[in-house]
Image 1 (cartoon, rainbow, N blue to C red):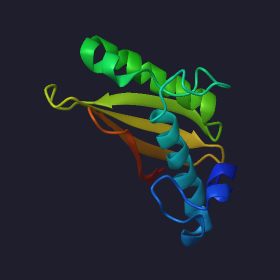
Image 2 (cartoon, rainbow, N blue to C red):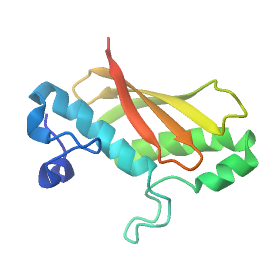
Image 3 (spheres, rainbow, N blue to C red):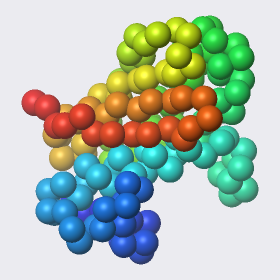
Length: 139
């Protein structure tokens, strides 16, 4: 498996690394992380041809916290299941953080279509974009 067509056309992943600078076995993982970065940093309703693409406005999440953290977790899971077809068996759980830090951290565990299990960590902070990092494959 390779990088997505978007990664190939732009020549780089969301983290700035060139597609050709990484081994083929790492391209899939970095491509999925890039797609999740784009997905999580797009506000729902801003993509005209896919109005449900992206996540809800983060200001409402922080304003309504802590109840809305569960809603954001569900939105993350549903968005992945809809817009990242290379992942299956998606599980999203919240990692405990300082409740006054204005930061939410989620761990995403899933399977690639080739059966490999992967884990990503994504952090949502006020005044910053979401960042998705692979935390390594695991068996």
